[in-house]
Length: 313
Image 1: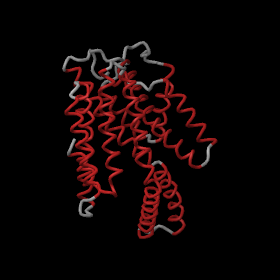
Image 2: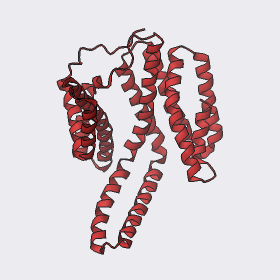
Image 3: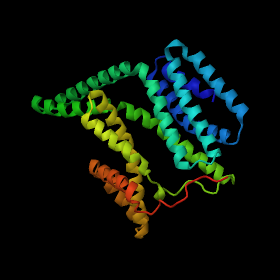
Image 4: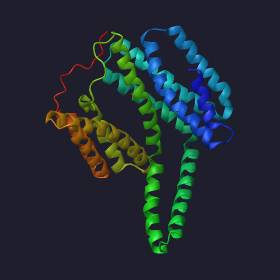
């Protein structure tokens, strides 16, 4: 817990070396997964004194190392790990359902991420837009050097610009999904941990049982309506929300596919070949998986609605 804030500061200030910053960021990325697991376990096992001492120590160290320039970013990054993990551990201890705890953790991550990005939003978007222009220019110059005609380069340049504009537009979704992925891995490790220790009757459900709760549907409908009727800022927020939800629906859709492939006795080799073909279909395959996950959230093809998803101690 003391190492993580130091690594986050180091990711911004490693003698201006991009390679060193990348290595530091990678270490911090995987350390965060371990911390989500271990801090939740500490909270679950009521190791309160050690939990608070290390948590406050990490915050003080972050403030001391971050200085005035990076203190807000480092403190919010630390809060995303420590606070969310503590909440997850305590809610499981209070015997809340695993789905409810996970959704609560994700919502808290989204809120803290928004708080983190607000002070530096303009700077972040300016930086991403500048990088987008540089990348577009480099690609067009490479095409010209490769013998493409100016007309073809201009045509390809317009396509590249649209793609890069969308990448910039979806930067918040990318950042949020990064921390959600870290939390998801740590949370699953934590659930397996308390199951192995005999403190819970169930571990992590098999992948074929994963499902997006139907309660997310109204949120998706609101995001779509905001996308259609809102101003530019509202539409951008809606786009990012839809992308994040689409990722969850995609995972649920893949679980549905895996369920029926196993049910029909498809061999492992054929399942691997099927997923390779699905991958090569790119956008069409992604859209199909998302649609399957969305439909399954209210049709319940796998008959999971009656399953008990709570953690018992």
